[in-house]
Length: 205
Image (cartoon, rainbow, N blue to C red):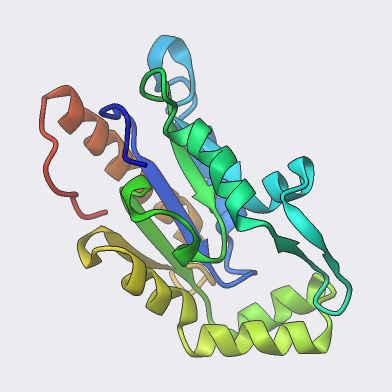
């Protein structure tokens, strides 16, 4: 299935190992876009994929060992397709897709991929505070060391739409705000280009 209508708002994927701050960045980015859309609507709507899976039952059960749902990817993507790519006209807003697996989504959906990265010690502390069992904690720390999300993003999308941002405080107290502001500025520029009839390529975030 192809995109049915030319979009006037971007779709941004915020991804990274669990604990890198995807949901926090997504929530703040959506809040920053409030009132920037048509008739005062938000320009970017946050789609927390984990929440969608739980709320709509897009899973095949709960894995007690990993403390995670086994996602029914086909049902999830069919549902999301109708949100981000409706048949009857372009979506009235853009979207922030918040998920740890960048390879899950069709390339044609995504205009910008933000990969959040984190110092391993900081990440270990965050996941320990969440109560992750040792096996799950080790798996995620290893994934961050191996840069799994960044590698999968490059395997799934054109390099010019991928940006890597640190999310561990190493950039100082203003790191989070700077990250969100940078993505918001990119989104505003994307919308201006579409309004001006510019459709080719992606500006760097």
